View (cartoon, helix red, strand yellow):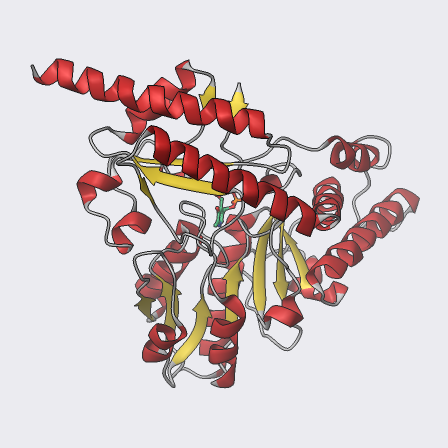
Length: 388
Ligand code: PLP
């Protein structure tokens, strides 16, 4: 099997599992317990927090461990907007882009439904980019928060985050970015990016599912979303997932080592794969930005097919990928991301996303490109058969 669905999830790396193992077994203490076992767990958690802080270029106290990317996004969007509204009731608008993950979009819609916020959606251009001018057009004195993703999960387009964050912050508006897909590939130094909050998820970079982190700049107020015993300095209650935090810290640290070299290598393979797919299926349409895209994502529409049928044909040929985001899989509606790019609904139904991890090889991608040509031809032949 050639697994080209790393944007959905990745296997746990051996080094990550080894680092976690002691805290799943003998060192199973609760970090809040005042005995040796608890203190050992608390020390492991503190070590993980410092390691995460090193990668994110922040202070350890600015890293809040969560149950993953979805929770980090919820905490950022709801937590910052609600805290700002509580301080000043006139701050009642939230700005998001038109291509956000549902974890951000639905959090903003929740604020709209239950807390009197209005949601301003910044449009994207046909390649999925948000321009600083488009963002400037929606910012106003009532804007409580801006949330724009670093890199898109369906098309891989990478936003000019530093420029967008600088614009928001020049107006005193906190800026959150969902960096779930960027992590492992792009620089994550929060200070250099100029962001106030940033979400990361473990399972996209070789840590297990169910662990993540939200960076929150120290001066930013955050209303908790999960209430309870006051762990994570009151910002996220619940007994900490010590092993998960250790795994996430290990995965982030490993991903940072040699990142540039991996990025260039995988980007070159991706470019060759894109050329090979377009050679094999000349009317295929590459979606997303031609250059400002994750090294790890190649996404296409294959006119005259259905994305789901192409997936089935590919799987029969040993290639596993997805028709868009894993979260939207199984839904018949065209992808809201592709719709936001202006892709017609009929073409959007033909979308297929190939996403790689750092272990991908040229041989894998050559075989995959040949399988794509055969799979698309197979689906088109079937379609012609049906219509006769
Ligand atoms: N944000 C983006 C851009 C994602 O791609 C994902 C996962 O698909 C998430 C958030 C949610 O992360 P998690 O699966 O850890 O909840």
